[in-house]
Length: 399
Ligand code: SAH
Ligand code: SF4
Image 1: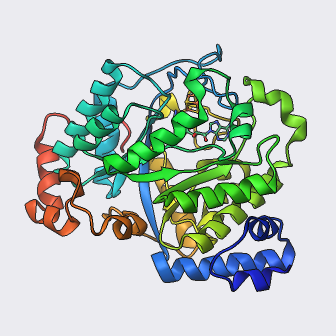
Image 2 (image 1 turned 120 degrees about the horizontal axis):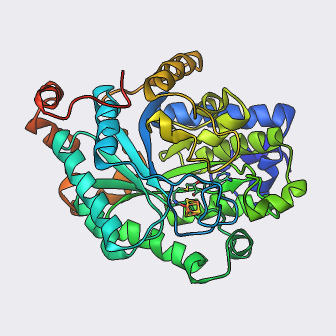
C-alpha cells in the first residue's frame, strides 16, 4: 500500500484510511496537498466565522473526559443572563459574523428548553433572521429539537465522541444518561427535525486505535453528516480519564493526527463544513490556521464575555480564556490572512452538503427559506439601525 495510490481512489477502505492517518514526511505532505486542492475546488478558500457563546457550564452529565462534568467540584458554575447572551449575539451581528453557536453543558427540563427557545426567538427578531444560530446543547428529546428548530435554530452540533460503542463506554459512566444508542437516536432526530447536522470525535483518546479513527470517518460519511468539528483530546486533571494519561500520544502527535483526520475527511466529504477546533490551538498557537490549510473551512471565535471564559474549561490550557471577544477577533484576522484565506463576512456559510442533501425536500420551517428570499425582507443596515435605536445596545462583549 502507498499513499499516492490511495489518493487517486474515490472511496477508501478502513485499512486505507488508517494507513493515511499514519502517513509521515512526503506522504503526509501529499495528503495535505490533495486535501487543500479539493477544498479550494469545492468550498473555496473562504473561512466562515461562528461566534461561540458558552452560555452555561452547568451540566447534568458526567462524561469521564470533560472538565465541566457534573462531579467536578472545582468548577465555578455560571449561566449567562439572557441579556448577556443577546449582547454577545449582537456583537457577532455587528461584526458581520454570519452566525453564532450557543453551547452549554447538557441540561434537561422544561425551564432550560424554554430559555433557549426564547433566546432563539429574540436573536431571530433583532437580526430579522439574518444571524444563523447553531446549537450545541447535547442530547434532548425530539420534541425539544423540533421546538428549537421552529424557534430559529438551523444547525446542531452533537459529537458522537467515538463511533465505536465499546470505546464510547470507556469514556462515559455506565448509566442511562450516557448511552451510545441515545446519541445515535438524537443524531437521527436532528436530521428528521430539519437541522444541518454536525458531529465529530475526539482524537488521540486513551484506548483509541487508528482503526477506530478510520471507522469514525466512515461513520460520518455513512451518516451523511453536513458539518464536522473534531479535535485532539486534551486531558483534564479533575476528570477520571486523567488516570490513563500515560497511554496518550504526545500532544504534538495528537495534533498532527487531528490534521490528518481533517485532511482525509475532506477527501471523503468534499462539500461539508469542517471546523478547525479550538483544541488545536491549545497545542499549537497557529493550530486552527494549520487546519484551514488542510481542509477545514470554519472557525469559531470565542465571544463569551471574558469574565466567564476561565470557568468553561473542558480541557487544560484552553486558549484565549483571558481575552475579550474583540481582542480575539483581531488576532484571528491577522492569522487567517497569513494562512492565505479570506474571511467570509456577512455570509451564513451553510453547508453545501446540506443543500444537496435536502434539495428535493419541502422547506422544513421558516428558517430554512432560501437566503435570497429572506434577504428581500430587510437589509443589514436597516437591521443595524434598529439595533442601535433599541434600548439594548451596549454589547458587554464588544468594544
Ligand atoms: N454539552 C455539550 C456541549 C459542550 S461539550 C455536549 O457534550 O455536546 C462540547 C465538546 O467538547 C464535546 O462534544 C467533547 O467532544 C469536547 N470535549 C469535552 N472534553 C474534552 C477534552 N478533555 N478534550 C477535548 N475535547 C473535549
Ligand atoms: Fe457535559 Fe458536554 Fe462535558 Fe459531557 S461533554 S460533561 S455533556 S459539557
